[in-house]
Structures are given as structure tokens and as C-alpha cells.
Image (cartoon, rainbow, N blue to C red):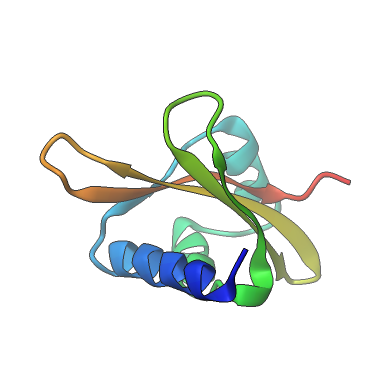
Length: 108
């Protein structure tokens, strides 16, 4: 994947986050990971805003549960690797929203 495309995606997600157009999907795995590691939603937001090219793992790849594509990142926080899966959905009125589908410890 060319770095330029990844950087464009990162810029887009950061713009959405800064505009308040993002959400962490409250899956048990995500919430348990945050709770077990003393992280907050604000910490998730800060980590997403800090994503960089070196955190990229894969994407865009098809979202097999729903339509569209997902992007995968890995970020190290306090010595722990986190798996991050992101998706930009477009609402009926054409506005984009970032969904953080996964934010939890990476499974080995």
C-alpha cells in the first residue's frame, strides 16, 4: 500500500475525530481492554489522533460483516500492542463518521 494513500486516510480520520464525528463501538472486548488497562475514551481518542504511517498494518480490506472497507493498525501503549480496526461510514445525509470497531490488546 503506497504511503501517500495511508497518510490521506490518516488525515481524514483525524479530521473526523477533531470534528467530533467518531465513536468507539462498545463491544465487550473493547470495553474490557480499556478497563483492564486503565484507559479512557479520551485515551482512545488521543491514540487515534497519534496514529502514524508506522502503525499501519493493512487496509483497505472488505468489512465482511457489513458493506465498506476497514483499515487495521497496531499501536503500542505502555508496552502493550493494541489492535485497532477503523471504518469510515457515510450517513444518509452524506456526512462521514469514523467508527473504531476494535481497540484492544493484540492477540498473539
